[in-house]
Image (cartoon, rainbow, N blue to C red):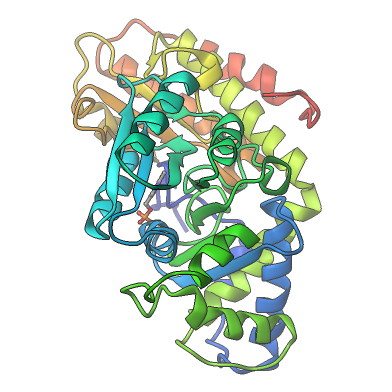
Length: 403
Ligand SMILES: *Cc1c(COP(=O)(O)O)cnc(C)c1O
């Protein structure tokens, strides 16, 4: 059969492994079946390991997009009038701020120019100003902003929040499973994601792990969160039952996706979370070399703040947004610009999840981008770009390298 489906190299959804595909392609098990309960129990335990979270932390998994995970974190922790700070690195920081405003929070944003991250000192100043205005509750940040390809370092932000007696909430939708995050060691309070990004599942699951402090904050609320579906207290007894291998019901989980979640987390843990992250780092490095050979300039202004999970690239002179269509004609789907300031002047390539274990997918992507650029009149050498990436992908991944 000819291959008509393009290779999916957008920043989510992404290619999934054959085993994950097989798991979602089963007749739906009942939500009270042994099969489903066992998969749920194993998945919750595996989440703590992938998140590097402590035994007292609580994983939550519900049907929904990454945005539902953002809403779940905010709805449980924030009450009207609470002061919150958003470290805003792009499109999804702005979304988080909007969610918080709708909950009645007093929101202060500390932004950075496109392609930059706000310095920790600026965030510390923002917190001081927030505390001047009234009581503050939490610091929100986006680990990898999918609109700019920028990664901020959550570790100093979690520490800063702790020093101020605030909770830290990190949107890891384009990062969890592909970027370093040590929830327990860093004492972060919520790390959230969606299934279709670096975890390597189809879309449809909102996932997060909450720290004991975050759970206490929910327990001490003066009123329950406005959303029943997203209320941690609605889900805790259900998930606790699943962890004890007992059936339970609050709202029907997407049962095939739970089977797939177990499979995807097994694959990550079989590799080891450190090695999995090292593979993302290596893929990013290989592609960065290739982009350089092709004369493409990344949106992130410094390599240290460029995500491992995607590349946001500026369109070269004389090339417009039709490049994305030309790349698709070569069998690879990439994405256009998402950030309002980058629409029509940039494009994005996802390299997360299963694809980072498949060098041929990465090299096929480089070739398609290179040929499309040549097609658009750029004087580029796609084969040289592919060779540059291949040389790096031939190395063994190095889990112990920092960064
Ligand atoms: C994709 C993404 C989201 C939104 O996820 P949806 O599943 O589309 O709702 C939120 N934050 C970040 C950082 C993302 O990359």
